[in-house]
Length: 513
Image 1 (spheres, rainbow, N blue to C red):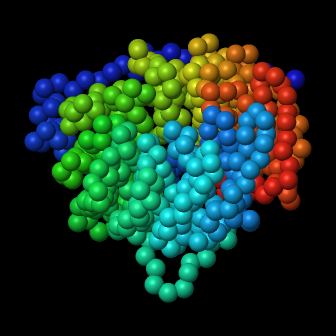
Image 2 (image 1 turned 90 degrees about the vertical axis):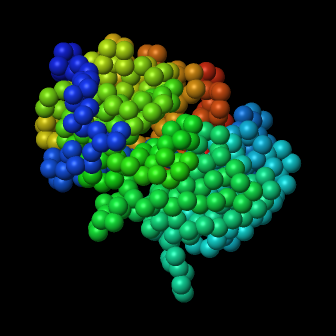
Image 3 (image 1 turned 90 degrees about the horizontal axis):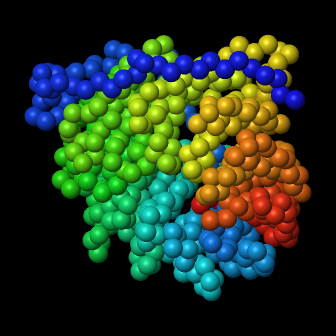
């Protein structure tokens, strides 16, 4: 039985909205934009550094409504598994397929083949393959929302332990742009060390952010064109751009730089660059679910800055966060009713639950600090992941001492259920109805099934050690690929409680949706 623990719960009246008056406007704004000198970075806490999270949703097999696609890196093949029949078909693709993704219309699977520097576009029904060469030495692929475009780059963060730079001349700034419908390859140059790409909702525009430039790529042209926006402002040792946020209509891009108090705002139709104030040391950005508001967390001034995306140059709304709390990250709930506030670097075992209707922030004490935060598809239950390390508040005889854990937190009642994990979490996923979650841990041949209605977990033994996990769209069926010399994947239905396993083909590549 889990030991009880004390929960601190306070509804803070001091978290009211702060609206800038017309007199304030005159002091803060210059030609419709906030002065970049309003804050000079004096509040920047260098010791904490960037907020960091373990991405537990990042890697998984790719799926459609009826198929799971798995790249077999060692055999240069792609395997299609039919659900629920579990029929298996395999087709040859390029050399060393390290990533497989499915288009949003479920008509195609695309493998990124690092060994042969090409993409294989595979028809989901017929398994016919079209090969499209790309530039060499790239290691990351991103698909546009409409499934037409793939952008491939070299992202230093995506290197694995086996990566070796080729001999000869090499640029890390050259990317490939691939039209998957016409099988056409285009090339362009972006800024130094690209590390993120975002698309407009209609797929007509992409922005690639690097350390010093934002490259705006117009995908509506027959030949995509690139407009490069210099983020340095002629300043030496420009802080690296850490995050980019694109408005859903593709009109504006927000760029957040490390340790810089102002955000860069780019008008994407003209490429015009401006600076807007966003409090002391903004460390995270997110969009509300309706796409109407950008939420920026200013960690050092303990504020939320809300920008109306109909006109981001307008005066933002500023909400004070609770005194004495260190919150540097925000996760907006899928239902748009809440924002979860937390920090992964402060060492504090605290969570803030921001009610969007009242703007009140409830602070919750937790068993341990946080490494990552998730939320169910209906926004009713938070998943709070805790590392084995903690900040000294637990004694060595506490059951959670030196153990990884996850807390299921009912966001209506604020009732928690902390669950001690046997090892570090490897991956998790949720069903789209908000009723069930699935979790696997490193080196453990088991699947944790999380019931979000009851906050109860059940453990299901699987045949071997897991590699990746996902959930079939619009279903309660999880699939778990596992380590096995011949390849293995298991399927588990939350409602049927049945486990089915397919063994006999190579599955263990780095695969994602």
